[in-house]
Length: 280
Image (cartoon, rainbow, N blue to C red; front, top):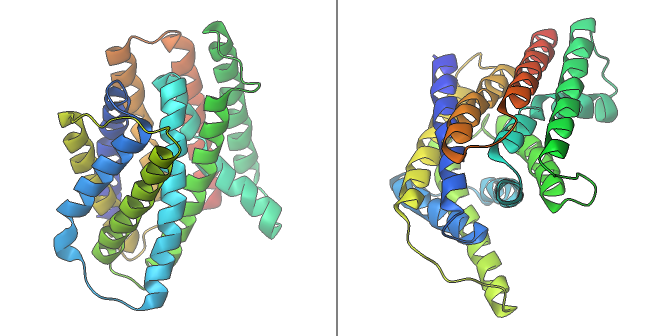
């Protein structure tokens, strides 16, 4: 059952990323994230319940990770093609493995090395494709924002598996949305104080974003909570959302070099699959 929930979550995530890109045409990054998250918090507010202070501190830490990942990811979406961003994000499971090697002294099996090689090849192809679009990675704010988004997303996924062992999924989702909304409100306040704020414009896309992320997160948390659920497999399935994002986003925004990026995407998914199978 947890696999089907993860698949449904991935499909919703794919459409969610496209909706975020579309919303950027009318609003600032922070306004989009705040409005969508506040609406999402409202949708799951019936599930708010009291809990130990320690649990709330854990969820606040998660909110910091998620907020960092979302803001940097939106900046990357604003500055880079959606097909480039979505494909790069597929590499997240590889960085989980590499961090395990650096931090815990783990060793890779042959199949995992094959996966790393495929992912690195895909990243090289993406860099070539981006150069053809006039994007230089050196000093590119979008690229570094994407790197921050990937690594904070990896940290958040690892933290999820840890905290869900002792908390109910809806408790995690409802309070995390509240804390993320508060953090984003603080960011908006600071920006307006410094004179960098922009006016908010209502867009029905924001409601779509809220509904999509609420459904995707709910399915994700419940899949992680299922007995026998494997974080590595769920992470891989969730990364498959990039297939929806890539083709739907490429079609809607008429982006360039789709053929080469599609090859890079196929290599990336093959590499992540090899990494996951080698970890089981």
